[in-house]
Length: 163
Image (cartoon, rainbow, N blue to C red; front, side, top):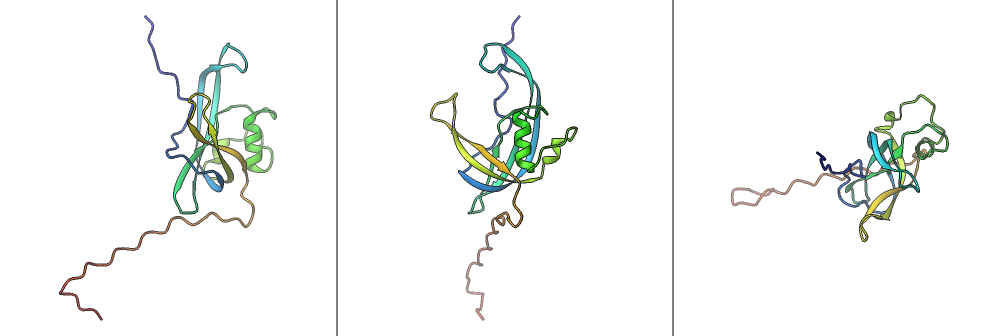
């Protein structure tokens, strides 16, 4: 008997509302690995099983509103020509050491440029992607978190005597 199952989502993370375009200081909120993911080989009809990883970043816009944006999924590879290696090298500002655990990037800051990318699967749909990443330059500061709203003044009544 054959059992139909839904394919694994192409996205590793739920990001919520579409993040605005621009350059922001962001924090890596999560790193996620997926093992044994079946996908089509590049420029082929043949299927292969691969191990993938992805990074989720959070940042605030100028108004203090929080957004999330995810990197694309990278094949887990330490090869110097791999996309993961290039991404980590750009983020660290130097090549990553072999044998180093990239899960340590969780909580680390980065300067990211967010772009809007049209979906290839759903025409008309747009998602936020990371166009570039780099270490946060010395002297750059993240915008302060949104200021809490001041408490509402008490309702006036006849019992209150103004000073």
